[in-house]
Length: 428
Image (cartoon, rainbow, N blue to C red; front, side):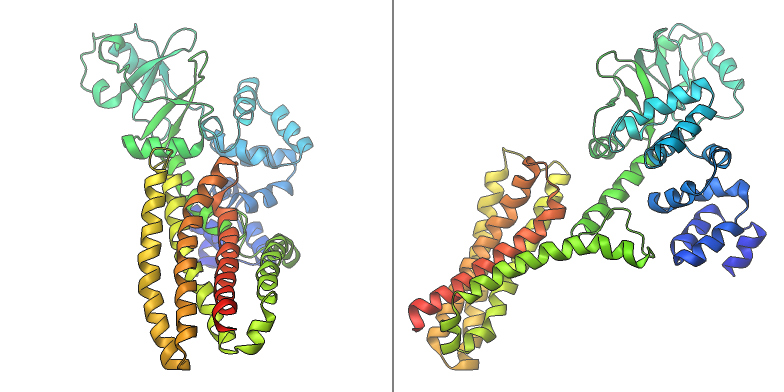
């Protein structure tokens, strides 16, 4: 059904993009060739960056330039930064001088910054003109840029002065000047701010759009709109989820075998190293395990309980860091809270597991040993789950990427070490 709509050109660009992303490489290539050339640019705006780059790399300069006309400036800048340098130079050379300057300005900023996120398609006005002149100026446009909720007021040197919301403009007296009704106390975004900070500002202030300015000259550079911020929020959610599994942000579900294998091999190698560390700790107590077989049966329980408890804390703290809720002023309180929670849960579940151990093996000493190990491991899990993401953040390492691996290693090692160490002391 969707293929028939695709051939008729009746399928919306968003649905075509979803169809492409849901298809294996060979079928995807065939579907792409069925799309009308005039609509390919619209479709590329809705597929993942990795897939759009694959298609654009296979185009000649003329076709690439035609496709790029459908993109917003910020989206095109992000994609051009991923293309071969020779191809990028040809595309820029084919643009008008004004468009080339705008694109080079956008490409000079990191992709995850406000400068890389902004769009240069803005409508600016001077403060000394009347509302009547503003209306005449607007009528010269065939349409306003999308998500326009206000006009940006600038000086002759493009220095940002304030905004004129449309809700004020539409009801203002035509003889009133812009200066009389414009808002100067408005939220602005500096080009160097991170995309995360931009998203938090939009969420906090319920913004639809916001101007982006140069922090030094205060010159207006562009604006960021809510649709771009929604993309940032979605991408960050996907980033956290995928990074915790060691996958790339733009992981293609139907990527070729070797490409997928190469990406995952590194992560598997890191996990193998951590597994060997845990196995080495177990090997130190081989004599203990040989004499008390029940320990080998109960050992996974200790590591599993610590891993789950630590993951709960780790996820909570990573979320708090992402929302800027955790800082030097409250980190100590949070640490104390988590240690107390770990202690209470440790005592609770140590009691339950000890009783089950007595019923299962009829040995009180083993019950005491596993109870003690559970309490120790849950306290260490709380300690590691709280401090680890804060430390990684200070070192400039993404906690979502490295946190779970380190946490699992700590809870496994501490769990095995405490359990088998206590067993060696009290059972032999």
